[in-house]
Length: 308
Image 1 (spheres, rainbow, N blue to C red):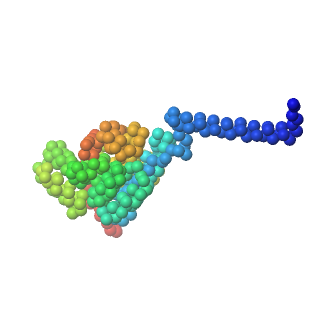
Image 2: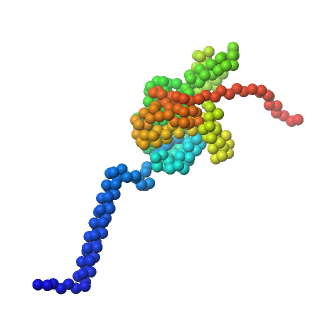
Image 3: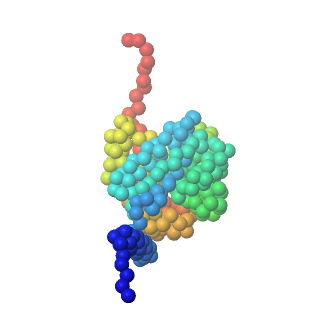
């Protein structure tokens, strides 16, 4: 017994089949996408989380001249790396926070930085502010690297396993200065002066106890980049901060990870070329391979002010 179908019926069947086929294609495509992801297909740009690098220091107040060069250094490094597709395809984002070089402010700033879920900290600048912040970073499994905090106990006490620095500690600087004065300049009498501040007084004490590298091509290039972008010479600790930014991004690139343990391990094992030299860090967090420059002031002439 035969059945007769109208044109309308055929259209309905055709549409129904089309919907079924389309649904099948979509399901297949989704399945293939999931399979590709499982097999390690590269993620899309939308899926790549930015690497957050905090830059913390005195950006206002009396000691801003110590902190602002670190911002400039980080900006130059990040701008260059982002122009080359970032780190393993991940763009770098700077989170800039001001601690005014005061411990009580630094603790609050560190808490804010942790809340931003940054992956590493470039800073702080002053030793007191650094010490106040380090415990907060340690509790949050976060590495901090200072270009300028020189207090020996920051690395030598063992209390701050998350801390690294690209500057020599006060005692190391003092020994170098004394050796240079006695063995190179052959001086017999040395006057030790300081400004009664934490840095100056501490360094002076170490000097009494014992009695940065300008030709590096990377240093020349970094300084030239600063002059081109900002129209002037860089300020204090610029090269140390530039080197710290390179070191932090280098280990994230080498490990392919922002994991705390991975970063710590890589900082101690992976060498990186910087304006300070080819460096890595020892078990305490002090830089190995940092070069020094000694400057000697000569031919000082008095400046006479007044009408001719």
